[in-house]
Structure formats: C-alpha cells, structure tokens
Length: 163
Image 1 (cartoon, helix red, strand yellow):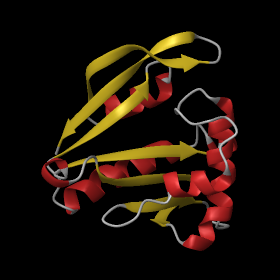
Image 2 (cartoon, helix red, strand yellow; image 1 turned 120 degrees about the vertical axis):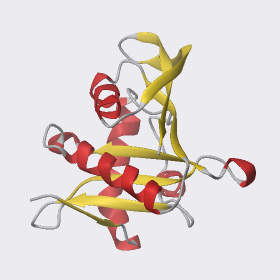
Image 3 (spheres, one colour; image 1 turned 180 degrees about the horizontal axis):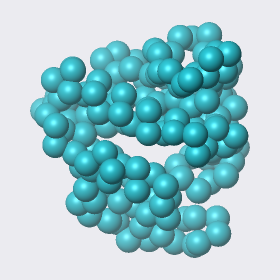
C-alpha cells in the first residue's frame, strides 16, 4: 500500500538521497551533478502557496516526492506546475502515477486553470507516457536544450493540461 501525504521538515533526510541520486544521474533534471544539500533543499522544499508531498509505503519509507505550486507569480499564478522524483528502487511500482494523480487533483482543488510542465526531457519516455496518460499534451519542444549523459543533446518538452 502506497499513500501520499504532505512532507514535513523531518522528511528532508529521506527526500535528499532521492534528489541527490537524480541530480547525479543527470538524465531528467537540469541540476548540478554535485548539488549541495542546502541548494537541493531550497530547490525542492516548495514554500506556500505551493506544497511538497511524499509517497510512502506501509512502513513509512519515502518512495518519492512531488512539489507543486504556481508556475509563475502574479498574472501567471493561475497556471500551476510540478516536479516529481521517485527513488530508483521504487520505480515501476506506480509511485509516479499516484504522485501525478495527486498533483492534478491538488491543482483542481486549489482553483488553478491549468498545469504546465516547463522542461520534460524528451528521452524520459516513462514520464512522457505517464503525463500523456493523465491528459497532458506536448505543446512544444525546445530542441537540443538538455545535455543528456548518454544521448547527447536532446529536446525539452513543454507539457500542458487544462483543468
């Protein structure tokens, strides 16, 4: 059984290894591979009006996390955005889908007009398939905007869901 709950400050010690591993892999986020922990925390732990959640198993182990909130301030704040990370050992267990469903519903409940993902690496096939299955569309791709460690220069998709 996997559940989603709001993250607390105490969860950072379990979230950080996930952020660190994703940053080091360099395949899905534009983060420094040697990202300092304090920088990782300030990037990930979204302040209000945003929210950070964790996906946990029945033992309470953190399997993944998502952060969400407005994509831009002021006149752009009616459009939401989100970021997701799943621990490598937890991939393929539906954690990303549960986090994605939570994020979409959270944005609806908070009265957002839509959700925009600014930079989905086009070679991250699992994420692209997942977001499309939740109703997102690729509305554009910035060519060669991401330096993938194996695939070289690849595009970044902008994905959109009207709520």
